Image (cartoon, rainbow over all chains, first blue to last red):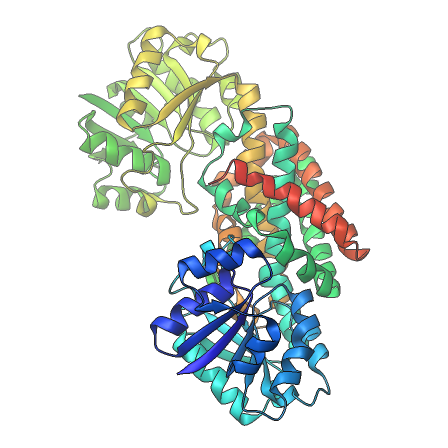
Length: 282
Length: 282
């Protein structure tokens, strides 16, 4: 059994703690958590055995998991690698932007101890109270730039995500960041924009949400997502996010113009093209 | 028990048939269905007792339900009212755009027999095979311009939707159409546009959907919605749809510009404003 240090006991870090412990992979779990309320809640819920300072946690741990927003994670990654260099320790992060993370590790003497990972799972909730068992089961986990990691580090990371029942695939960090802009980051922006649109209208029309149906709820669900997590993602994946957002706005304008022109044939063409998503999403 | 004629045995018409029958409101259910495959499937599934021509169905029925796309429904509404005028028959439609429907009934001798209703329930699927029990339970149903309906017609419509366990509220058709543009129609357009954006990218990046997560699926779900239903909705609710689409594109541009400028404070401000949707959506 491994001693695990988890920096950030929120939705992802906390859910990893739950399953790594109950499935017998984790021995002691040491939490590093700067938010007092989160730290107390994580202890109360039992996500960590104790809360420690970063230096002590890094020194005691066999496995260091960085589960904080991507900007902050890139900042402390070199410190984790300082502790890991020349040891058998594994360092992983779980961030949704991978090029910035790999950049932060580049050339570090501890680089080989680090595996850049992105477990593709989550909900629109955050904090230790959002942690849940089984969050990762059957979902995809992407390892990036794995040629920079040692065979030992990769093997340990594969074991860990195997315990979490994730399907691992391998990708370059640059390609990863482009892909997630399309299949995750843009969905969040469109939900945020939808929420803003309807909240604006609500200022004049108090009861507008009385009519909101299931379709609206599922489309706007991601708009509940946490700013601490999403500001650095959108900022650090800027070029990809801009590109997909511009394409998306272009598609919205095509709908807009077809509706404005009363061009039913064109509206139909756009909808039927969009329907091809059925091929992919069950 | 009532004899019911249902024009259109798809998701909505079919689901009404299921619950109106098993809850003892409907005696004979006569389907009017022009698509041969839908008609055969509806009989096989047991949604209707028989399929008949429109004239016969309208003449035999106590209650006539128009459950076809809004353009087509507006066209046959006067024919249903011809059959109903001066009788005790109730005519309802279930369309998502109500001003065009009320306009089609205006001044007709059978206007008092008609109640313009919008049961706010559905899924992204269509056809008789999409019909399901319990679809309407606990959801909202809007009655529009009810001052134009007779007390008897209103009472019967309330009974029918009571059997379906719907919460009825009353609204002017004009206000209804504005509201649904915000809490339903725009969600469909944003999902269609998201699907188009990612499908475009897929032409170059075959495996892009391997990374698609739960968040993407829920945001894009409505893009599976049927063109036969949605073309006339977007077309007939043109002014409201244009207005909300323009507001929405403006919000998307605000995100785009904040990301382009690397303005993290502004991105945070937009996300935190959008987070207020939590107040409304559980």
